[in-house]
Length: 159
Image (cartoon, rainbow, N blue to C red; front, side, top):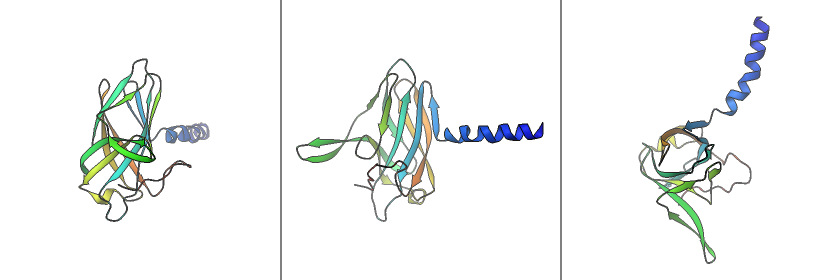
């Protein structure tokens, strides 16, 4: 009996670990929140994640907050002529039954006027609250990493 219980626990552990970075509010699931390690003297840093909307109704990300920065803003990258430009956006639509990806060179959260630089080192975590129009607030733990977690992402240190 003990052997079968241990075997079951060992088999279930990877499934639990696979969802360790998921945060749920209503029909929304925020997965894989991460940030690049803060380069020396960088005045800002960005945070990224994926929002999965499992519901039949769209929602909207209205704002973000964190204790590690005086301001956290929603931003996007857009092409203007031959230049890629970053601009602040007031909110971001989360499609019904779809995903919204915050990634380098796409939508991202800019953390401005950093208060606590010590948590912005590789291996650390910091809280980030995402405020949705319908689902309400969801607090996530952002993992700080030396490099982007997925192959193929371009890294964006700061701007």
